[in-house]
Length: 307
Image 1 (cartoon, one colour):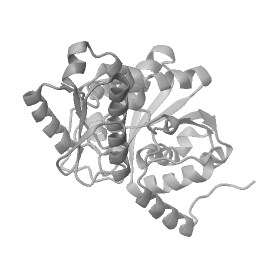
Image 2 (cartoon, rainbow, N blue to C red):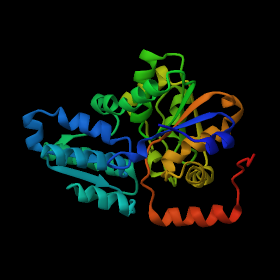
Image 3 (cartoon, rainbow, N blue to C red):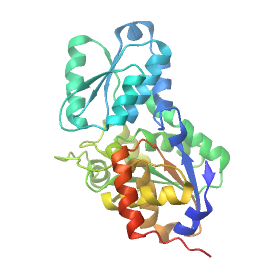
């Protein structure tokens, strides 16, 4: 976790970034994958594992499976980030392409699992995943016990639930804020309305936030413990990718950049506070990165005070 003075000037608060983008898979999810796969029994390891992903969860399960000698099959939707696909294959996973989005791929996996008996690893309804990713919340607390707020991106919710299960036990006064994409608001709407809501699409630039339905376990944790959740637009997310690069010299994928977009929305609320933004991953597609650099460097839209 690093303190970035330029980011602090941009936001008007004491800003820290938890750099989960520096993990072996470029994402926080590797913590959960290793925790889950390491705990499989012999019979589960022999059957192999199957899961669905847009990339970071898949890389996590693929790497963990490689470490423990487990056969791994991963379903991805059509048009998925090619760099993430290549990374999963490099870790030894077999990829299965199906459907228009994550939820289509997930439903296919659930159908296949019933036929072939592989151990299905759900990307949210797995306590071992949540416990594993919760270790980054422990690291935040160890380094900054006086933290006021933690802002976490929310797709399926394993990351924010890992934070919540740790923080509510150790520092219950810390405010935890979740952020979703406006174009994929299923979890946000569910949290607001108190019941699980599904959307017809999740067509957001932030593939890590692109879910059409909340998961049962993570939704129940968020509903009980989450302080606040907001949504941000794709335009705000892409601008935040640029601003993160400018102020921290780290590359955030769109889902990770949503935390900065949220902090800018909540600037008045966060003024003068100690705030941690979770940079959940750095696996941005190269074509999208070129677009971000071209669009926002030309607009010169960042407003960072120089004195």
